[in-house]
Length: 328
Image (cartoon, rainbow, N blue to C red; front, side, top):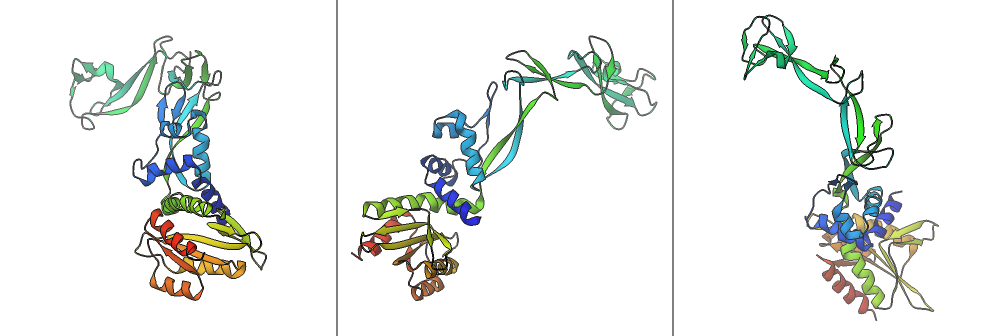
């Protein structure tokens, strides 16, 4: 499953739209992609739309990256659509539970602590002061002289009072009224690049794509990512597999490993050796970014794995060119 996820991500890294989009995260241009509200269409992602050129495909594009494990997401909002015309231009009405009118007045209930009298705030209001209608004492300090005891609503159409209104939706486009039961509600997300794939994404599209092109320009038939079946019958995935020759077809496998520390540890060397032991390619390369540890170099030499150390794509291609073309 992990191998399949890696293959899916690698394929996405090769896509130009994915490359342009991820570069905005990797460069620090954006740290989180937040949607922008369009009163009629709902939430949109203008940055994605400008890259892929089709506003309708923006969410599908983001879903693919999320499902491949490249992006993480958090619930940003929920949007209500009109069940009749599908417009997002919907307002919420708080209505009277008796006559369903939305012409209601909301007030605060106030209780005079000393005498216990409770009424709506408007009946306590005397100019800018609050005065108890029962004992006529001025109320000055909240939670000392008086406390707020809740909300009270009055319907201006039927004159009935209540504490909790009912919710209704009104479509500003087709003027249809709907209830919560009828509502079409959609989750809206904000997206971020997963920390654990930042290195993988950077290596994947910054290094793999130009190496693949370089090999193709030098007469290799290239697959990336690629499966090779070993003597054991197991399939092994490599970041790049390059073939050359007609009669005696030579196979070159390449894996990439990176580290935020000073050097890549020896584990990628061990992993690559386990694969080439079963597959038996003609040549095996491990590109280490920014460099390989000393233990890793020693192990690679004993396993006949050629190490390519590079800080960026230019250095990787130059080093790989020197090693591959010197064999001609």
